[in-house]
Image (tube, rainbow, N blue to C red):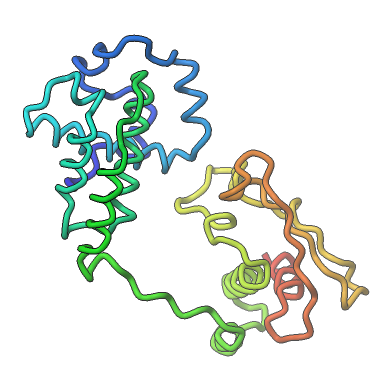
Length: 255
């Protein structure tokens, strides 16, 4: 696949980016409001990936000299040929994701999906012929012993606030079974250091200092599976060195 045509920064400007002759091709298209509602059902990253898969599909169709009708309302033969173009190059799951993006384009243009038995057979063949480079070995799971090593290597005397922050994050993510993207932004936050998607100090409910066994409650404003309402996570006060409750308490005091 060629480099992405779209970036997250450009996504809003390209929300309706399609070749002009395709945009006018289909009758009975979804309204702009319906399209926005569908887009709101997934994250911007998913929309970005979908747009770029669709752009690749359009490029392939135009290279194959297909007519506009066959692009927006592809036959099963066209779908099979497109999927087969990834034979020996991509993993089956990747090809299925690209076809899902094509299906979204077809549906948006008001047409039915023509994929059937032959397409499923092609996808099964692609799965069997996937190159070894398309498979990644499973990552070794993080262990408590690794957290202990982190505590050993980082100064916890209170003279290095950054160390307290790193330790608190590692312990909380491990024992809370969190995704890093739910608590750490990919880029710097706004000048006021706040974002509606990431937890603040006010979202953390720590036990009283006199309560040595009390648990903590952390509210996540936005998670992968609960984009709007978020979720709450309970951090148990384990009697271990990598105690997330103690680490968060120390982090708040020092920073």
